[in-house]
Length: 391
Ligand SMILES: *Cc1c(COP(=O)(O)O)cnc(C)c1O
Image (cartoon, rainbow, N blue to C red; front, side, top):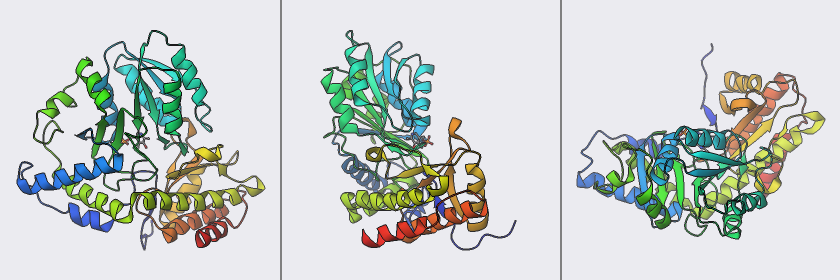
């Protein structure tokens, strides 16, 4: 293989690019996690995280990727035999549901077409049908990273309230926090699952759950077995988080990534994600000419501003195009997950990105379509430039 030159363009929808200043901040040797120097860094990082989440409640942190936070959230809030209502969105909603089932929870699904997502009316109907309140929690993935669909959480909250149902609302924000608009308390969310390696621009390794006062009440009664992830144990620790050693370097990085987000301004971060996402969508809409690749998400109001999934025309493999982009142009994109494998590729536009990085990725993808003889409309990158120059 020939040596790859220049920058590796990383357009996966997680993990994401790590800003240089975050890398520099993390370049630390070990120190005692009870050292006052570290406690100051830790407290600043957690305070910043709470501002980004929009909560003043508890945040429990774990040395684990997002899957650990999924598990921690279930075992700390539920009891054997409880029912959870999962809102189907795609690969990640299926994954969280499968985990719940393994823990002995009953899983009920609000089914949905993956290209459109759930109808809030169906959520209300499912909860109205549950007169005995067997459903203890509604599980929603804010941003379905496998398909590029963002769920309108205020509509989901309203749908639960319309049924006057007491279930907790648990939300996975792993690929939306720090990229899409989100307000935990204002949107009435009881538990929020997040991870370090997507919008928060860190390596994988720390994930967390933010818990509302209502969630803390549920925790007091929850009986699923837990040990490493037990919030009660964590509350007795000076950090009010972690069972075991704290990964200190991650907090130097988190403090810096949150500083970057807040220096740009949360609203500006959200606006930038929208601008770059829209550039991507405009490129794909041009490519979709000549029966070319098209946007996987079909609902314009739900198209994700952190990842775009691009569905290949029949008979063309997405991974061949991804391989060309990587081998020829040093551009990495995400593949289709699970049953979507080979049928689509995913362009991540989440985290530390700017316009030329986006255009570089779109240019590499457009060239890769051409090289592989995939039918498409020409000029996707031009459409993206038109939008970015005017936006
Ligand atoms: C990435 C992701 C996960 C899984 O997180 P890991 O850190 O890979 O364990 C879960 N949910 C969503 C929505 C994700 O994007």
